[in-house]
Image 1 (cartoon, rainbow, N blue to C red):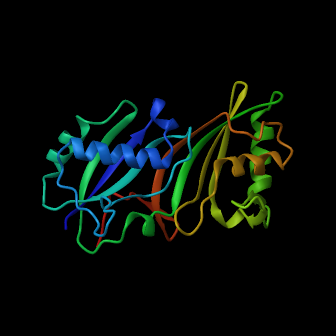
Image 2: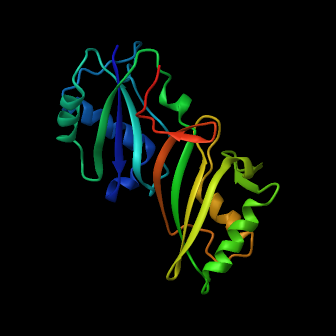
Length: 233
């Protein structure tokens, strides 16, 4: 069955959709667009569609990805036109590409996410102070982070090998952080964990992000990022 990869953005009120609500929204959109969606078998068939990485409620994104399997071949331009007519406010389809037969699924290859995290400063912070805090953090041999598990317990892990890049800028009363972190089936870093790590350096910012936006999802190989639309077998 032919598989198509869709790049879309999630902004405005749509950012408040949970991942489950987003999945249901996309299923309705694809049905309304009249696409010949392929379904799984069994007593409770589901559309054969999968997302690259779940997005937290309230987080906007410029680059999300969705794979959809169809019963028949359709032109990429035709799919783009039909789907775009059915999308609700806040969701925008950016591009559609045909995935080569045998290409791995999105969740198996997407392993990097780029975030913009806006934090409120508790006091005036100079560019030099901010630069020193970032440098101090990335030079640490380990960056311990504590995470609450589903059963209410605590789990610690090292953020250092999962933090690929980090930059920060002053913006009035805000500090703007751009961080590339590990994502996908191998492990996910949460934006608020990056914020807490910066607070641990003594930086006077609120550890709870004021605003988070996902700028991109990538396939990271050998230190280089590749767009998920650059599909290879």
